[in-house]
Length: 268
Image 1 (tube, rainbow, N blue to C red):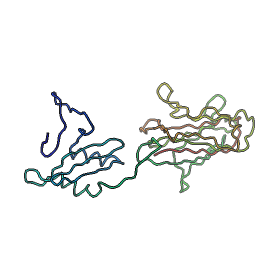
Image 2: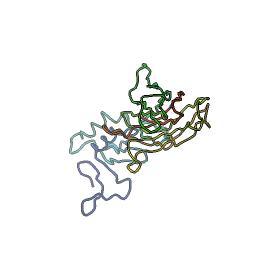
Image 3: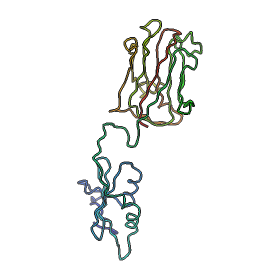
Image 4: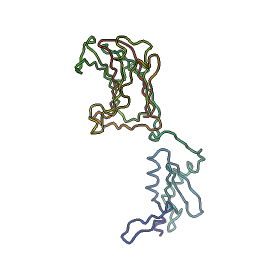
């Protein structure tokens, strides 16, 4: 059925759309161009059939159709057609190489690597500077004693925590930590844990354990890595909540001071 130059899909007796194939997934020009403008990686194509344009969008593995945009309706130039010819036509039908993405991150996000240097059992023992030598402001350094209480005394520190909490949404692609070739004190006391959303219990979707309890004596002089690039975990920033927080916990002999480097790979 054609109404005002637009080919409409079939409808059921109750007026709801009757969709039997992707060829019947049609939209108005207003809907089509709005979707195109608000979704990166969406490509518009057309065929000029003299009196009207056949237009379709390709987005991921789905296509959306405007089967008939008439150039003239009742002897008057169609303003939708003028809009298409003026603002969109020149960017249509552009050859695109087949796109294959091994990552499941959201379209348009880019890999971002973050490095944080950390000295265990040291007051403010970390470096989180950007290229301007300015602290990026999204890291909290915490020392914890044998009773799991926060302490400001390095000689009582048994666990050193780095809380990284950016104020934006991101996806975790992985990360690693550089282990020094020498660890001091009781080697069996050195261990690592990495926990996402540590402020929320597991039953509510928090306290997600990315890395759990590797003994660092087995990795001295190497890098301990975790790769999630093929299945990144999305984290959404919500003001006032701590969903984006990731806590790096280094367990160590009381008061021992050793330097590590943390590396996080995210899509943002």
